[in-house]
Image 1 (cartoon, one colour):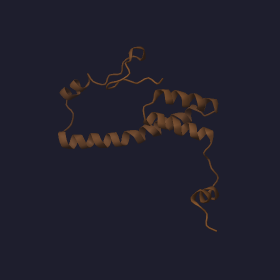
Image 2 (tube, rainbow, N blue to C red):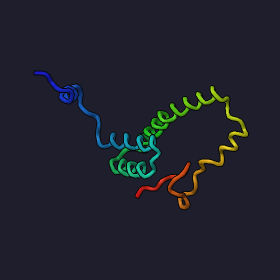
Image 3 (cartoon, helix red, strand yellow):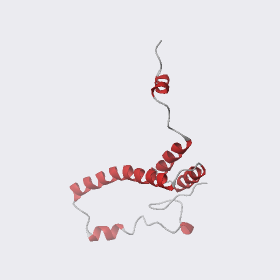
Image 4 (cartoon, helix red, strand yellow):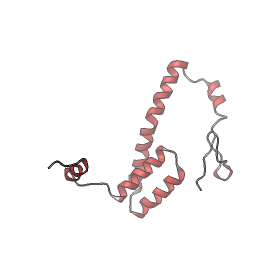
Length: 117
């Protein structure tokens, strides 16, 4: 009798996907999608489950590294097409996407964080 894919996975190795691992994955996903409320929620959940700060830090650093890789690649592509950024272009771009203090943040537009309701 042939096994389906789920049955094959069940017999291949015991699962290590614990609640703690799930929270580490969720923390990394929050970093990947820039979701502050998600990060705060999953940080709290992970703490309740006894996940160490070091493990959470590793998840954050790894997620950021994965996230930064395509960002660097597209910046390299832009530089190949347009040349490197200059002091003038950096100064012009610095007026956009500034992060306002949390108490005064609007809910939309470039660089502003949306609030979750």
